[in-house]
Every structure is written in structure tokens, then in C-alpha cells.
Image 1 (cartoon, one colour):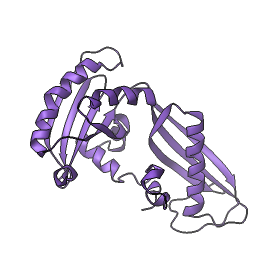
Image 2 (cartoon, rainbow, N blue to C red):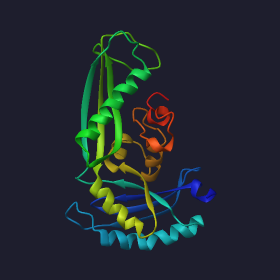
Image 3 (cartoon, rainbow, N blue to C red):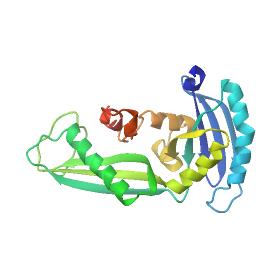
Image 4 (cartoon, rainbow, N blue to C red):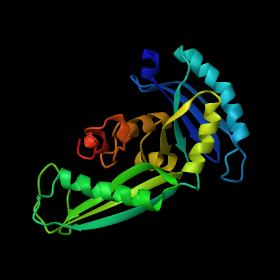
Length: 234
């Protein structure tokens, strides 16, 4: 168990190649990396090739960590992924506009997404900007007075059907998907920086983008739902 906590395995799937990384989280260093370049002209995933790629690498990774691999974080680039922005404006009725107020608005936006895109899973939920009475706010550590609050967010999501198919391949090895990240988002966020894909993914998972909302299933902890849901102002 201790060995598992020290490492994270990332599987990257795109039209051009498959990649797999074993990251030493403490030292932020890959101790295993393999890739397979593909000649596919479509965005469809060749699951037979993916199976073959995993066959060649899972055993090697398990040998290195001295344990069975139970989970993998999947990084994916695919045309089926949705990436769009949406905004919401809310009239304020005498309340102080603060972090709690913003949480409510963000929850409404999340619920709106889930209502309209029931067949998709949110990968990234990012606040683009937030305004009080038309003025852009740089921080919500303080309270504000105003008549209107407006929030613009960016959703990146993946079809449940695509997640299910990838999950079926991993089930063969008794491995579960432990997270989903979008490859282009990682690339764009760290644009201009020399950073390995697995290290970029690890940094994003651990709050490198302070404008990204970390969603946590409600059943993890019944009380304090927002303790991990809201990472915007850490």
C-alpha cells in the first residue's frame, strides 16, 4: 500500500500515440515511460492495439512498484471531448458577495451542465473570470457589495460511452480509472514551459491551476462537500 501511494501511473491516449508513465510523486520523476506511435488516420481508438500496449507495460510497472496496479489516471485527446464556456448572472439581494456566495453560483452552473449533458462526465471545470457589477475581481478573499454577480466558466467533458470503453480495456488487468484529464488542456496550461506530460498532469491534479474547481463525489464525505469541491482560493 505504501508503495502505491508513492507512485502514480498515467496512460495517455490520442490519435498519434499511446503513452504510459510511472511517476515518482515525491521526486517528480518518471521511473518508467513507454510510448507507441500510431499511424491511424481517424480519431477512433484501436482498442486491440491499446490492449497490446498495456500487455507489454503493465507487468513491468507492477514489477517496479512491487505490487499489483489498481488504478490509472487517463490523459486523453479525442474529438468527442466537449470544450465550451458558459456564464451565469445573478442578482444580489443585499447579501455580502464572498466565497460562499460564489460556491452557490458555481454549484448552479455544475448542475446546469449535468442537466443538459447527462451523457458526459466533467473532466475540468475552470473559472474564466468573475465580476461584481461589471468589474472583474482578482480575489475573493474579501467580501464585496454589489447588485449583480457574474461568473464565466469553462467545461471540458468526455462522453460516458468513451470512458466506459476505456474502462473495459483496463478491467482486463483489474485496474480502475482513477482520474480523467484532457491532454490539450494540460499542454495549453503549461505552454512555454518545459514539462513532462505526467508531471503536468500531477501538478494539475494537485491544484496548479487555482481557477480549476476540484469535483469530489458526495459519498466520499457526507459533510463538508465543499471542502475539496472548492479549491479556487486556496
